[in-house]
Image 1 (tube, rainbow, N blue to C red):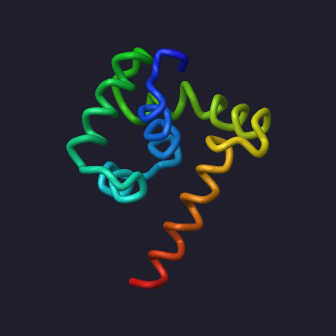
Image 2: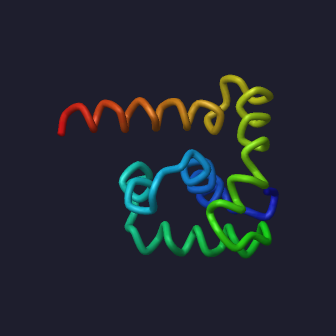
Image 3: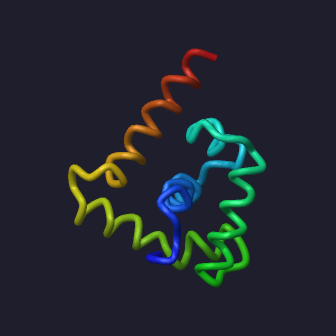
Length: 92
């Protein structure tokens, strides 16, 4: 995962959480095509060909990152994202 840019890492964690490209774009406040570009780069850099493969190969990395980086921005990002998504869904 060291090959990913900081922004690709943000997208990586959101995508790993099972969010669609559209939801990821909304959460990261960027365009759909930008998220699609990030996803393509993530797949290429991590040598995976699908979201399923990404999740299977890297789901433990997400858990490990959250446990080891308590209080870090990336560890809390998923929690904040989920809260924001839940709040938004309730508004709609």
